[in-house]
Image (tube, rainbow, N blue to C red; front, side, top):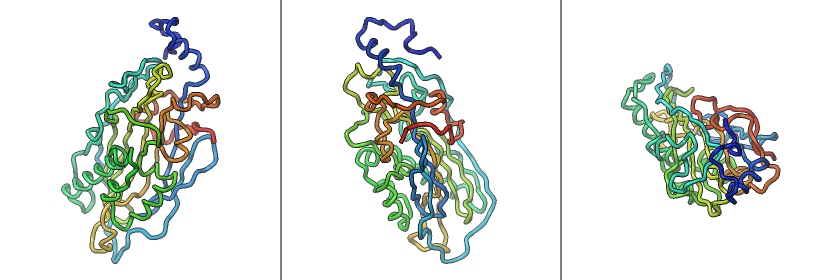
Length: 328
């Protein structure tokens, strides 16, 4: 890949180019936050930060969960998935257009907002018919939109769009997680003091269906989201990845149903969640929020990643990538 400092179309006499070249050698950020949640029955995730160069968030069992009043069903597992978008190259340099902020990134070809949260053709899974699977897909789609795209969640930090879609008995555990930095495994929230551009985030990914250990329908969602942040000083922004933050999250939802469960436990529950955030500001990320990389460009210790930036846009890659990112 050609470095932007070598690009033949650059006019080195332009002030913004001179400034960009001077900063690029020490400040270009390729960073990510990795978060992971382990399965916790039907409990929401309680996560803690582990030591290391990257931020690791691990799930822990919580008391309670879906209250059973009888035996659970069992059955075989089947899956169905959607096709994810191919990855193209990230431009090393480009003046960012606020009206088209994703230009120069692989996210430029992704769908806009909720249109990218696609639902596969439903097929029977174990004892569940296609109509029941279709309903589970639709609830998972709504949950992804509420957690990652709804402006009330993203900007206002309002938990109600998400809570309204979950089983009532899970609400307190989810609220507890949202009050901690671990909330980033459940929702995406913009750090206070920053604003998104008035464009829809870009989205690509897939979902599939199977059965959880208790025999309930389990929907796995695996989506990438690209968020474009507003910026004031155009001379500080010479690369689209200074304003675009990418989050990938692989989340499992169990759809608890049947008379063997208490009424308040019937509905959708978080089962597990893991993922990463790339090209963001590290300070807010440590607190569970996203903010643009340009806001920390003055830091001389800005971390870098060894993987090419395209890898973080690639839904075919495993969620677990190399362990680099924000220094603690």
